[in-house]
Image (cartoon, rainbow, N blue to C red):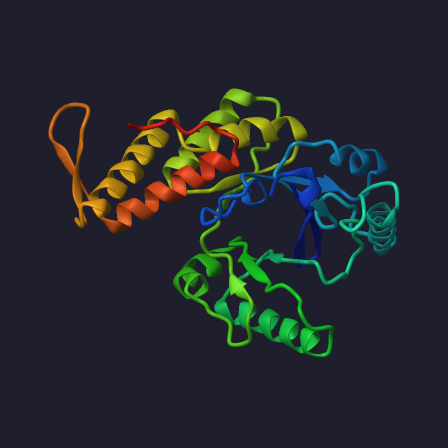
Length: 283
């Protein structure tokens, strides 16, 4: 699971490894999964407490839309969240966290309109970190596309590379929330449609949505079997000093498998393992 902090214009993901979950398709550990992003209102003590028992891969402590807009309400929510995260009884050391500590790994930035926005954030991060302690982990940046202007600039945003260090989390993409949070069939359809389009996960506004989201944004048994066959047969092919090979298809014929398809298969296996799905043994 990962914890995140979302304020007006900024969301910060803070990894907490002891709870055994966090979606990057490049990693093979359970702490790398980011299938469901559950928003938790920082204005509610009850919901903050309940967030510690949720099974969502990522928890976003929201200080934006779920908190009333008045200055007093925003200030109260910030103090409530700070006290909650800083409580000795909430999270075990050394993973107990407070706002602003150096263990932050990812910034999720709402309302990004252009690559220039990312450049500005990157520059500010670099300036702040240059005067801080050394040895900090690299930061990843995830841009939220929320406007027509951002869609027009999507190519520049997706291709942006920082001049200072932080990497854009461009391989991650999460669907918007399903506001009909009691209709699980509708949520399932949205998740399946999103996965077919290449999304890695989905945002959630209710804890009950997290389990269904996470069970959908994983490889199917058929995809896992195919991936296992590719990895196994490529190992045999390499042992025979060969490269590409033909994979037998169910309906007959063969499909050519080469290095890019091997990489896809390895990613599929990694995600399945991270999600606790058994990988079939191929003879």
